Amino acid sequence: MKKPIENAAIAMVGMFLAWVIPGAGHALLGRWVRGLVIFVTIGALFWSGVMVGGVLTVDQQNARWWLAAQLLTGVHGLAGYHRQREVYRELVHEVGELPPDPLELDAILQEKGIALNDNPGDNIARTYTGIAGMLNLLCIMDVLLLGLMGARGEKRGAGGQRGAGVSPALDVPLAKPSEDDGFIPRPDAGKMPAGHEGETPSPRSEGQP
Image 1 (cartoon, rainbow, N blue to C red):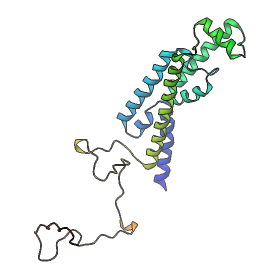
Image 2: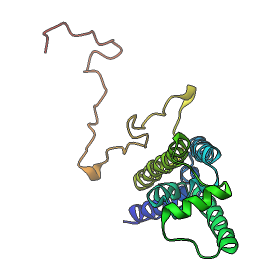
Image 3: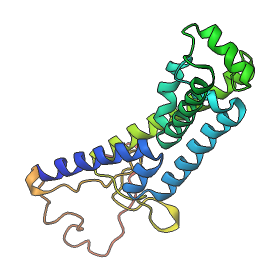
Image 4: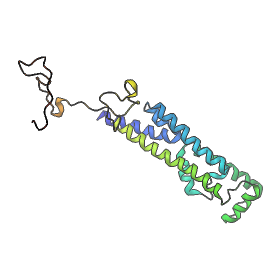
């Protein structure tokens, strides 16, 4: 029972790291190349959206459902959330209490030049950042599964091929059968019958048992 508990603990830690810093969970499991690819991809996709939409691409006031997806990018979403909070605090300091009507609030933001208008730029900006969050959610679930299975490292053999004893589907070491599993190897397994040592087995003809 010790191994499953250890795998579960590593999987939980890996999930947390994969959320805070995209790619860190895979790095914890020894998959550094994949972790780096995830970190660069999620970060580039998120900040590309922010570049298109501006500081209020992450907006707690007017786009809470998008915010939920954006926060899945971990440190990227948290940075965007912190920045938009600062913008609203500065706005409150200038104009007083913010109006409850979203249209009035949007008019004030547009007057300040910091609002996202209802145009393709708005949709593109939040779509980029939201998709980045959903992609990282898939990466978090991947870390969970790999951690629970006990997969560690890239598991590659010579020439970039998977090493012997590694499942091509799961990319995890295959368990060897043992006597504890009811497997009893035959002592004469792999040997030629008496009197035929050194001979090469001939291929069976079609239909021959």
